[in-house]
Image (cartoon, rainbow, N blue to C red; front, side, top):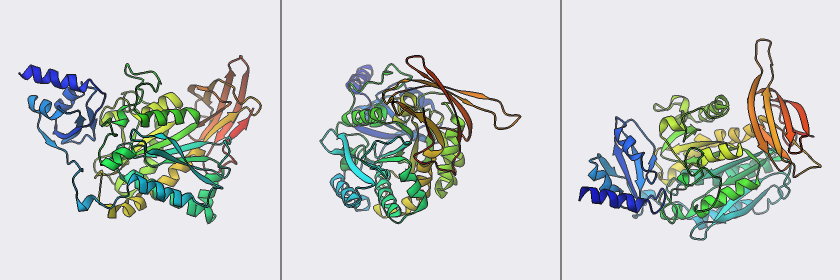
Amino acid sequence: MFLRLILCFLYISSAGAAVTEEGFFVWDSTGESLKILNQHKEISIDHRTKEGFEAYGPKGLGKYLKLLKLDHDVLAEMHEDNKNLGGYPTPEEIEKQLKDLVKDHDSFVKMFSIGQSHEGRELWALKFSDNVELDEVEPEVKFIANMHGNEIVGRELMVRLVDELITRYKNGDQTITELINNSEVYIIPSMNPDGAAAKRRGNARWSDLNRDFPDFTTTDNTNDIEGREPETKAIMLFQAKRKFALSANFHGGSVVVNYPWDTHAEDAPLTDLIIDLSKEYASFNEPMRNSSRFQDGIVNGYRWYHVDGGMQDWSYYWYNDLQVTIELSDHKWPNYSEIPQFYEENRESLVQYLSRIHQGAGFYFPDLPKTKGKVEIKKLKSFDNEKETALGSYPFSGGEFYKVLPLGKYQFKITLNDGTVHKMISVVDFNNTKVNGNFQAL
């Protein structure tokens, strides 16, 4: 009987990857339970603490935990009416709020859909730019929130950020004017409106969207949309059309900046830069900065808990789009009255992170917009005792390339597919924002 029930659970869970119909907190101070459950790709592990971790899976997970005699409690499901958890807008009300905000401001912000959810809700994106209808050669940065439907704070903060960007741009605020005039800023407030409507982690099919992306360390290592959830497909197709160089996605359940890799123990490229950006975000957020759990308010994803199929690693590995995951609140669905405080804690961090898109350099071919090739980047000596450092080789297409980099002087060696070689030198700084970004025409 014991073996039959285990086999039954494994059979059910194999029917769909990372299904989240049941959720538990597994008490595990030694890490032994984590080792056992990490063997099953159908189980999503989340928010590990010194006491234990969250585990999500298909129906049957609870029976499986009991059979393994793992100490666990049912996570609080939020389907029941609870006045303390009410007050949040519906996805449809969020859509109206956004449309009202952008109305009459179509010279610098537009709202458009990148696709539809499983239940047919639009996945809304907003673009900020001084020439919003044009695809300019400018650095591109994006924010995505609410990919876990029951982690709601990010969605609310993105709506408030949209409002602030509009207001400050209209009022001639220098920081926001320089940001919008010299870059393209994209915000997707809710990647999972179906999950938000149901107050649950997964989408309408109970799938965990942050386990649904290609993963370079697993057998699912082809950057292919086939077989994925509609929300995942929409993000993947959108990303493939753009040239994002910096991103963040927003979650809840802790207060910390999580940086790549999530799926791999080795350091990601430019880890020192990623750590600096993560620390900077945390430094403006007092609860994050003063965390008793995470030094400096940041944590490496893999060292926290192993995640396969996450959006963060997919974005950085396949598109050179440096992305971090920002956990905004200890409670995933806090009282709605707390949202203004969460926004105040994050507002300066959000704007500063967006502005870091200008800490980089790039090039474009004005007469060859379809040019493809590769670029080798070398950091040159700024001081006598400094060594030149090769940062690697990166593919590019669409006639342009841009990369966020540590401050310094760089040589770019650009080799086109026809064998033509170009070289350029660029100085990367931050306080001196270049018109339309630090691009050179070749």
